[in-house]
Amino acid sequence: METLSFEFPAGQPPRGRALVGCVGSGDLEVLIEPGLAGKLSIQVQTSVNGSEQRWQHLFARMFDGQTPPAMSIDIHDFGATPGVVRLRLEQGFEEIGHD
Amino acid sequence: MVNTYLAHDLLWGMTPEQVPVGAPAWAVESIAAGHPVVVRRSLTAPDQIAVGVRGRLREQRYATSMAVAAISRCVRPEDLCHAESTRDLPALHALARLRPLLDASGWAWGVSGSAGFELAAGVEALHERSDLDLILRTPQFLDRLQARELLALLDASVCAVDMQLQTPWGAVALREWAGSSRRVLLKDDVQARLVSDPWQPSLEQVA
Image (cartoon, rainbow over all chains, first blue to last red; front, top):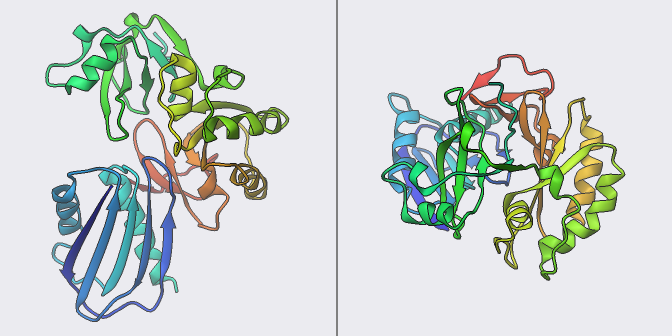
């Protein structure tokens, strides 16, 4: 079990919060809450050791060329593939938008 | 040849020589010890099948493929519902309690994950804090209220119980289908996607 932290520049905090995903192998749980203006902070708890680079790349690619909302994202990962991580994050972003 | 093997089936017959060069040593050891491999959801060449090799540690999972012609034996999760074990572990107690309840549900169900591996292979894969992984064959629609009732049964267990619903289109977690999320994650051989009905998935968001 490993806990990782990431930070990215961001805009204004969103209004809503969202909890998506599922506890179970190959999946992840994502909690999104409003963060501090200008900062997107991500905490990842993962069952896969030595995965920091992979997460860094995945987030960097997702937020490349855009200013994401200032969110505080908590991820509990149970060995999800990058594709599943992306889907869950997009699902969460959609839900905070619907608030 | 039509591929009749399903995700979570345990297969015997792979030999250490068939493990790709560069595979971790523990994966070769597992095969050399005669342990089965687990069928994965993934596309392969028609004469191959996607499998995973299990090591002793949780993070020891190695994805590879094996020749269908090499398969000497197959055990399905549903073959393990009534397998007996003398080990005194929460996951096995949970299984003993759920057995009559699931038998009465009218659906075909089975044991997967480390419990399935241990019951099928006689290898000690479970420990004190292991979850119990189950599958439910749901060729027909299981509504979300039924899913909630089923989840409540499982959640009254002495350990965490994870059940995967196997629809004709792929697998979905019972816990998520029983929850309030509008769309749920459906995994098939090709992709994962978010769908609102795992029994009638139109093409939605694809991973």
